[in-house]
Length: 241
Image 1 (cartoon, rainbow, N blue to C red):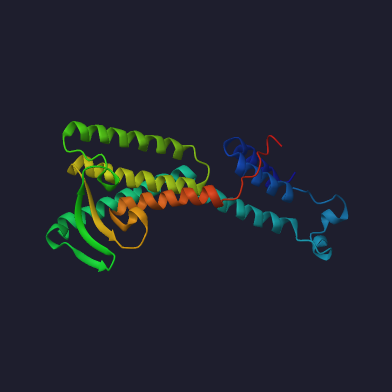
Image 2: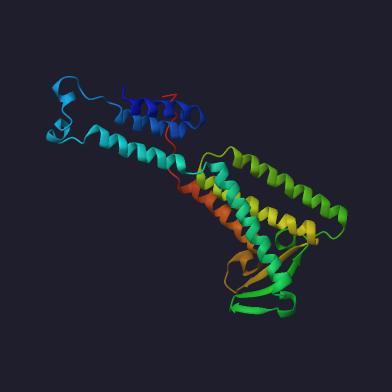
């Protein structure tokens, strides 16, 4: 076995117990590139594969090594999800600070962006559509606790996720949820800025007030639905046959 083939085999053996799906892909690639050149005169003649219409083994090995290195450079799903959560939280809180403290939307509202969309300020003391609206400290604390428990469950799901689209969706949901939790903790209520209104038969979206945290949550849910209904089936675990 060549040094490169031994290197790839060692990498595959390390990856398979950690990520069986990726290990199976690497195992298939390794089996395709790990064949040694035959002994004899052909082994001593580096141009023999070219005359036979075959790619040189060294070039194929280098190409495969480049693919493997590119795969290795991709972030693990959990870190991708955590980065998405941090970005969603930062964008939401930065936008809220700017709208409240710099732009002073409370003194300028409403601002018409489109016939169906206005910019305004609305304080939500509950959850979506002001359900479970609370105003006293004890009830707000209970609502905060419930939301943090949900975020904790989503974080546990994210940490064990092996699919990047799932991790990205969960990260956006977690970041958006933490953005609204931060509002409730610091300001006593969630600041909403966008009012979607239409006479079209779109159900609850006909009159919907939301913020960027809600947008992140919606995008995250959409990614989870896409993965559920459209993602191809994962290959079988190579260790179980």
